[in-house]
Length: 301
Image (spheres, one colour):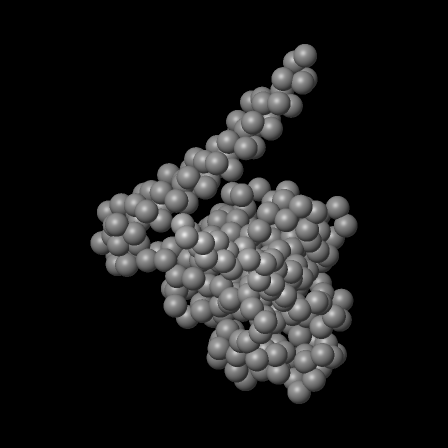
């Protein structure tokens, strides 16, 4: 009886923490906006021009009903899309057998302090550039240590090339992955983050966290093995600061998925006065609340 009750309690706690996180995000948006918080969409639209890795089925949108009656308008549509297209999440299961699938990702892992690693100048010289440990160390010299639960995103300037596949994959033959040339993460930098920092997400403004010429995708494998979430084809990173934002990755809760489309957005204070007076304390309270969840789980066994 005690075992069954304990399992039921755990299930109720999981549902409760998801509801609490959703309510907290809503409160941050509503209260933060009234206190000077700015919301920035970092998502490319899903549409017929969505960027997909070669071999994936294209986006398909079908109108089912668009009817007007004497009393109301009614509309309903159907869509189909590959998991890994446009702005989307890579679940750990994408490149690691037994890794978390999309519906298993804890919601508190889908929000964190924004850390933007700016390599635009380096990528403009070398399209095969990979984020290095030195890039991370230089970031911390300027902005301080990468915070726990961070969402760490590479800004290579590639968002400006979207959605032209020839420009995004940087090749005249975008159907042939062997010809791809775009920036990503070096596996040494990925490993450094996992060993030295406690992060939630690694992401890029390109089609892959591994650079275009990768053959064995070591960053994907490392992230999967350590249950780190990936996010790819993030857009418009020039609109947010390198430090000081909170980033949410609202991924479709796709059962058994290795990835899914996501609406990615950043929240930040309009000025330092707001940062000091109210919104930052609100965000801190939310992160404190969710840091207590593992402790509660231990209490109930």
